[in-house]
Image (tube, helix red, strand yellow):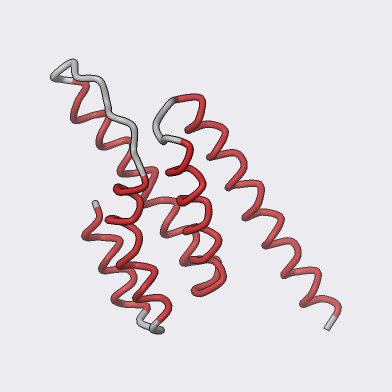
Length: 116
């Protein structure tokens, strides 16, 4: 039982470190507005709570890919990337979280794929 508690604490520590690091990085880059950062952090925590480490990692990777693809696509046109807002986070993340809340892992991954 103690091993499980230590393992759970270690996962929570890693999740917290990832969230803090990404929040700081994307704040510095100007990729998200402040409410969007708070909501994205909340979505990450909820994904972990509802679907475990794999769901959290899937959400994180999806956001990172979306950010990279947006920058790559606009680099050729010399356009400045817009900041992501709460509307972006809700539109891309809420369907996936609803699927997780309903216990539908395949639908969760499908919603994340559609967000890209």
